[in-house]
Length: 146
Image 1: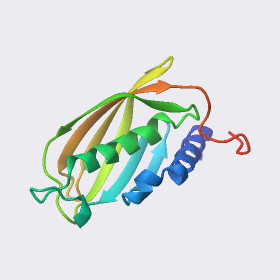
Image 2 (image 1 turned 45 degrees about the vertical axis):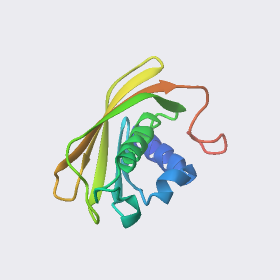
Image 3 (image 1 turned 120 degrees about the vertical axis):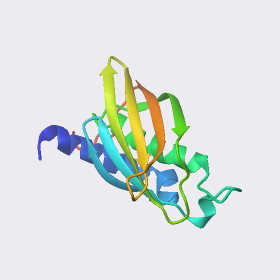
């Protein structure tokens, strides 16, 4: 494994281990690379809204988690500066969703990332865009070699 891929993977794993919210929603970290991440989640009954489909907040959280793992993949502590989502199609009970995040740009302290959420049939569920901002600190603690 090359150094950049190894660093991105270790950053994502460390962040995911501390991320009780993502874990509580049943998210799974599927992959991470420099400026990219894939996160999976199955739609549970407690995630359904009044129309019987997955609540948009869960879709946003899934995309936001993939965004977080992607923009923190360089071991620079990075937070969201702004995000938006477009809901394309409903996600239903039992669907297995995958959020794939790809870095579009990164310069100075900011970056732009796009997330595509698809169901198990590869159908587009939502599109998310996030803008990141690099803050002080690192993802890996000082005991963990970068």
